[in-house]
Length: 328
Image (spheres, rainbow, N blue to C red):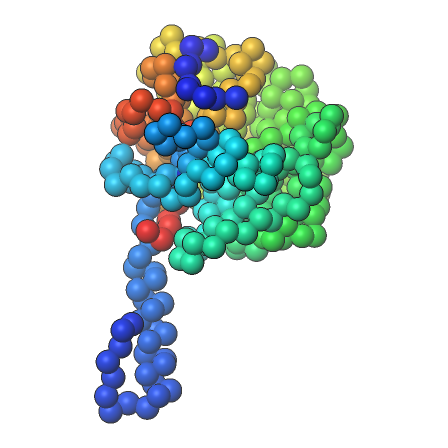
């Protein structure tokens, strides 16, 4: 895969004639109303800023405008892999500021940071549950395979998800919108497939039953009816959408094929983490990272494969996008 990514290994209230109680209640109502109106549809992603050694996390509008830094580079390899809490107030992300990849959160209103992975293991790809009370993530210790865990939103009460799969790699976990399952990918059968973990039954189902190529890096639609994912089954890095039971798979990005996104998961396995897809809050579109040049850029596309748009064209590379409703 011909990708050149530099540095690869972001009231005042006036009140008269009212009681103090009513004043406080009115303030509360106005603050809540103001907070709800402040939510906006944004895409978060990671990119190196100017000459910094690591990544910052940026936000951008779905049309590619209004870019700004949300989480600035701190140290080491930086910050990447953002996820947005359901209420839009918090970003869960990877950071290298504690030596080795750990999970942190930042509150977009208070700008406070909190480390939520306490062990010396490496943590990646955290994702909020639909109610915001739990997270699912990857964790790997020295000499071990990557496993998936669920914990509370502060990293406690950890539960193993990848049951019976400890000798293989399990990656990129995301929740179903009803909170009843985790979708992820694993190389349990030699090639990579998309799997579902049932949180009640604690059993795992192979959804793609791969016969050609590799399927990886899934994302579930807001209504739970569709799963988007990447596949190299045609020799390119393509974005697919299928029904939630694994049927009716459709390639959305055949028109994007070029010499820069020729891809094989195992030959280019050190690059898989650069590419993510994410559904728009209304479920009509997706954002994804791909290579149309020697850089990695962000693209949006309708869920039926129409209206493909490249929304970033910078000298850097834009990685690990997520689309959600956030506070400015």
